[in-house]
Length: 426
Ligand code: ASP
Ligand code: MG
Image 1 (cartoon, rainbow, N blue to C red):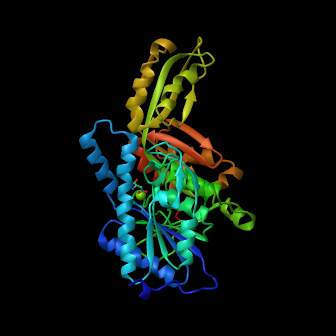
Image 2 (image 1 turned 60 degrees about the vertical axis):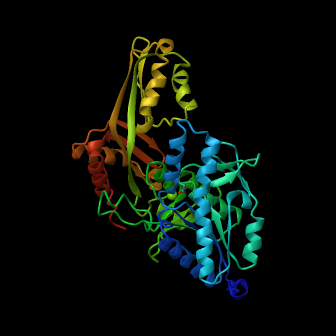
């Protein structure tokens, strides 16, 4: 059979293209066949194609449930062995589907292309990739299919990179292979000025800087996994986010923009804000009456850091009579754990009480243009104020202003800010 198979025809402008397909793109046999056709189309244009895939939609969750059925505290190492099977199924089926279309394809698990990671099961970090076997296959005209989300540590243990980690696998592969393009396919056709489900006026952004994208990803826009954007920024990988169900141009995420293009992106043309995002997974804790002395804050946050709880906005009130209040936000699903950890410190730190508010959301305006434009914070506050939306907390970075508001007002806040900064206009 293989002797009758096509090889990529030689092409002078041949490119090496990494294509990543997520769980929904791989959600059924028909969808896997659709992915196969996409890969084959690119290969038949004469390009070298590396496909990185996730497990079929719902599979990772299904496997986690199985584990929960046999163990109340399953060992991280075994969870990784289990979860890695989801992507193993995907790569084999996709390679078969591609071969069925008459093209050569070969599947690889993470360890076979030597995606080396540290030993942090469940959130491993990639240390190196030895891409030789991939290059060899590409040279032979084969389409290479790689399991996303997984790697191998120095002792040969299977590791996984954290939920949504196939994005990171694809970006890292693109960097290691010095690919010409890294296409991230999903069920949405790009990155929008805000969630179109929240506001119909949302507009697709044709090009966005990686730094802005990093803010958006970490603020809860779900198109790209945050760590993958971080990696793309660091290793200067350009990403093309597009839909696996249509042929249209998606959104480009560009590592750095300089010169005229950069000036345009940075708002000299008037666009100061690029997007509005919303994170509804927010809770606020206030520690009332903490002793105002050196080391107290470090002590307060230590147990949460050890437990891997991400602290976001932090505010400390000016002290009165040697006591101060500290307020901060955590992901809502970690709030109860955070409270328990803090209450364990009450004797030591001598605070009066720890109060918790779970009904909050964080709405953020993001734009590289803010760096050079005064007044963005004022306009943000004015828009919310005019709409009668109270701001509970504020935090800013060079390219972002985040306001914590009551979650019942979150969608309204997104809409008024989208209007205020005229994001529906190009
Ligand atoms: N299958 C893994 C998950 O569901 C990795 C991925 O989808 O990127 O998180
Ligand atoms: Mg995914």
